[in-house]
Every structure is written in C-alpha cells, then in structure tokens.
Image 1: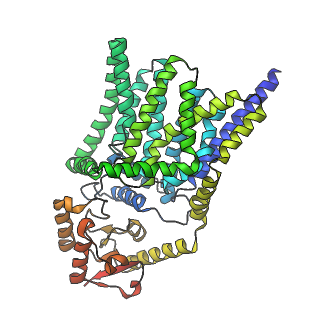
Image 2: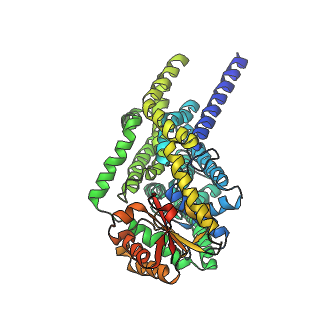
Image 3: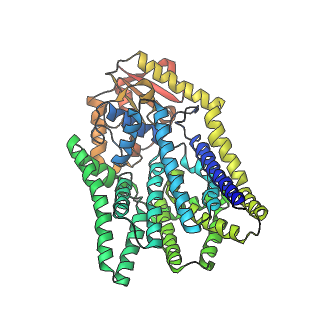
Length: 506
C-alpha cells in the first residue's frame, strides 16, 4: 500500500515537472532570439541589445545611447552580449528569467492551494496568452515579471506565516529596487503589500516587528539604488540616467483618463479569447466562498487590491502595447490556480479531475492554437514575407558593411536597431533609435538631434519609404530628417523603391 502511494506521488511529481518544462520550452520558442528563429529581433528588443553591445564596446548608456528604460535592463543586455554567443546568449538569459517567473508563480500557487497539479496546470491554460503578449521577447516586462513573481511569493509567505528570515525581507527590497530600475512604474506589488504591512503593524500595535520589516526591506532597496547610482556616477551618466529613465519615462506615461479608459477596454478584450474574464470572475467567487483561514482570506483581499493597482499601471501610458500586460501574469495565474484547486478538491475521482483539467484546456483552445501557429511555428519556420523582409534588411546591412569602415557612422530613422547590429556599425549620436515620445515637448533633445545630424553627419541614413511618400509632422522628427536628406544626401539606386531606403552623404 505504501509502495503504491509512493509510486502515485512520484508519478504526480514527474507529471508536474513535464508540464513545467514543456510550457517553458514552448514559450521560449516564441522568443525571436531563439536559435531556430527566422525573424530578426523586434523594434524595442533590437534597441536594447544595441545598448548591451554598445556597453560591451565602451559606449556609455544615456550619454552616448538615448532611451527611457532603466539601467538594470541595459545591464542585462550587457551580460547577454558578454556571453559571446551572439543572439543565442540573449535567448539563454531570457529563458532564465522566464524559468524564474514560472517557478515562483508555481511556488506561490502551491503555497496558497497545496495542490501541485493546480500549481502548474495554469501554464498550459495560459500558454497562448504568454506567447501573445510577450511579443517576441526581450522586453523590460519579461524581465520584471520574474522579479515580481519572486517578491509575490515572499509577500504571500509572509502574510500566511507572519514571519520571514531577515535575508528574505532584504531580498524583497532588492527585488523592488531592481524592478524600479527596469521601469519605475512597475512596482505596484511593493506599494500595495508594504502599505498592507504598515496597516497590519499599526492595527496590531506590533511596532517592533513593523520597524524590523521596514528597515530590512528599505535597506535591500537602498543597496540596489546606491550600487546603480554609484555605477552611473563612476561612468559619468548619473544625471542623464535620472533624466531619461525617470523624468522622460514619467512624461512618456502622461496621458488622459480617456486614453487610459480605452486601454482598459483594450486589454480586457485581449483576455476574452482565453476565457479569462469568466475564469477570473469564478476565481473571485471561489475566494469569497472558500472556507479558508483568516490569514488567507486577508491575503485574498490584498491580492485583489494588487490586481487592480497593477492593472492601472498596465493602462497608465494609454498605449496599446501587448507586452505591458506581462506584469499582470503572476496575479492572473495565481487566481486561476485558486479556482482550479477548488474545482479539483470537489472531484471525487482521478477521472473527474482529468476531465476538469481537459475542460479548462478547451476554453482557450482556439486562441492557444492560433498563438502557437503565429508565435512559434511562424517564428521558427518563417514565411515568404518574413524571409523577404529579413533578406532585404541583411542585404542593406551587407552593403553598408562593404562600403564603410567600422569607424564610419550611420543613422537608421525609426526602424529599430537591427541594421546597426547586422552591419556592425554605430550611430552618429546617442539618437540611434528615437524613443516613442513627442519631441515637440522636448525642444532641447530636438535641437541636439538636429545638430548631431548636421555637425556629425553619418555616412549613411536609412528611412522608411512611407516617410518619403507622405511626410508627417515633426513629433518624431521626420521633417527634420527629410530636410537633411534633401540638402546633404542622395539615394543609393540599388535600394530605391524598397521598404527601407538608403541615403549616402554627398
């Protein structure tokens, strides 16, 4: 009898590991950096990798490369480049962070449900959503979600057990600091849970415990802040880092309430094909009706508040970028695990439990099939259109490489950074790819950009054909570039009429 129980337990553990690994592999094959990918890095992804490559070759972020993301993101990219495995090194880094996210999501789910199957079956239920909103990977949210999942586990452990080791408190602060230096508006988890701890400590009048928690978490965060600021001061870009990663970033997020409401609806519509609105509603009912201990009920309330607070940060910038939803994944999956565990608990046999899991898989089946087709198979097989676009970009990069030296500078206007990476050339200024802000609101940057094109003129400039056909306003500096092209450059005949047009300096 004991042997049979042990065998059943081992079988369940094997099943859990298989689900985890298969989910990890499938999602990671949706990353455009994977070794089998036929697609070049995405627009933002290529920009970030350019930062890493530039840092590895002595360029200073923010001072010599402009962007409004936090410095920890660029340190990740730098590490990926230093692995000396090309883009595959970046993929390995991405897989590490993805594995970390999945691991801590499953640990948190098990902490709340005590059900191993429910703690991992949430991954095949949402594998399509992962593929859809990761958008090819190597984006700041994909790294932040691993840190958020780790901190969420520790906060939940603290709420249920009423204590943590001193190093765990400090680690919460470290994770918060690192997330803050990825992007400052992704720290809703720390705001909500720390505020909840403050209220709990004051209500219970356990001031000694509250002071200990506050000091240790604060110290963990301060260590990260000091180390990163010291690093930036050491390389001479501290002022620029603060200006771009925080001032510019928060101005980037400044939108109207009407725009935010539109995005609220947009992201809700993203969840509908996976059946998640209905499932989350059922999870909410399950949490309200469950006969859980007081501590767990209290935790459910805090988690629900966090769900809403984090969703607000998703819609904050008013932009329909799918990857913003990635930071919502840990709490969505945690609620799904609670629902699944409740359903499995009511199952009277293994057969019933199997059919419950099968039914839950069928709900997002069509969306999951679509996402595996579009995000995995297409990524790794390619299509005629993808292959043609990649060939054109490689031909363009090869021409630049053959007709210039490594010391020559180029400029690629609003087209991502793949041409820099493929041609092994750097931009003529820190404006290698323009961040998506309205430059009419940043007159100093606008003036600096124009001066850089005039004084430090690149040998080649690459623009989209559509800019030549239909010039738009100067919010993204299109008109500024066109004026320079008309006076100082001529088109290279070989690339006229293509989607990307190459201009050479007269």
